[in-house]
Image (tube, rainbow over all chains, first blue to last red; front, side, top):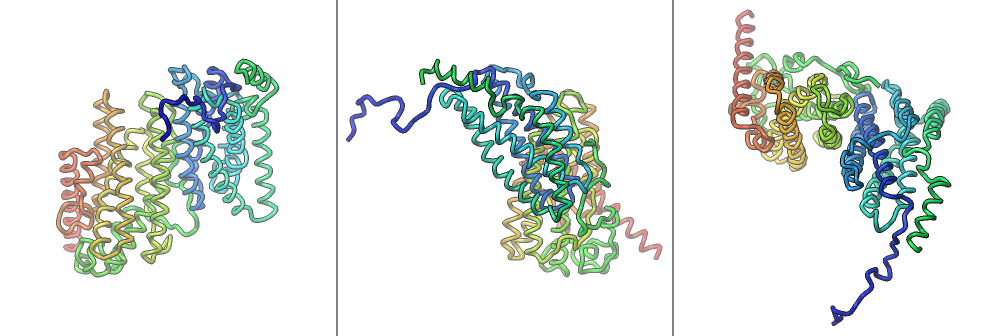
Length: 225
Length: 283
């Protein structure tokens, strides 16, 4: 029988988590506030679109996805007070004006003949950018100090990947010839251009910049890794 | 993207056909379809209660199931619009963040109910669009006051859904259809949650505003009476849809509130019978 009093290392040999991370508490709170804001705009838009989409399968899928993004927003809403932001509304804000412009442009597809435009905005532009920003955050934050954010990012990313696949398959099923291909491509290009100006869902640095990389390097030195 | 849609804005594919609510409930077709079961000619109607012995019971159940299906689509659309139509805030034209979260959750539930209804309708031998759609549920979801909207939809109409699902579940039991019973049981569980959401939000949002509470409950009474449809839903032995007291209590209704709905149903039935007698007298 193993001796229960025998000293063991605090971190098991297979546990490779490290202290250093690219984001301090303030930067994490800023990003999380941006995430909550964009998740809210997305679930509101999907909810609003349900009534204006005639295709029954699309109607039911976006109704389902609406809740997932509401739940992500709630994850971020609950994380903010843990990041010293006792008034979550204060940091629930867009990263910049361009991301506001993006959301307005994404939701300007309104009529019942615009299902393809609606889906392209969400599933070929916004959700890929969310996956990118969440993945960047996941891979660069401290695996010890920021574990609660990591857990939420993983839960959200799991939904995002599933929804991305759902949405992409719906888009492919709606594209029925060269005209539809052009419509989808034009819409994607139009919205992507605005998103590029925004720098991603959390603004410039959403998926890393030289500044952020430098900070990460400094943190590594502090952490001794 | 505009806020506050009207019924005319609802998007449907080519299979769906709409009828006015009154047309649907006064459909004079004889026994065999839903209209026959609840139509205006009493001599051609079988027993009112939905039971396997009733002539045309399978068709009546299929028609009711299709009505549930289109109701679920509109419930999905209504909950979705409530996510979008209002700003966050504490004034009477705004809603709290948590209310939007509840409505988003309801979107998912209603989307699932649509899926269940499509599968169940196929099982029962019904095609999408075989029966007409009336848009009464979404009409209640167009109210610009979020409290009245939730009271009309979540308490009155989702409350009706509790009664309908309970009736259909019992019909599934007595007619030996385990698929129907299984599906209705699951949907009933969700509806109790939705009605409770409506009850909770009604109380929270009107805690300091008795006048708004009064208006909301009056709106609910109007909707409740309308959907008692000549005694379609009530506590009489032969009511086609029975008031599900136990589940309504779970959903936050008080005994007095349930008694009131029961009274409205009796009143609606008396009025319908008087109307039928007057029509018979003229003929």
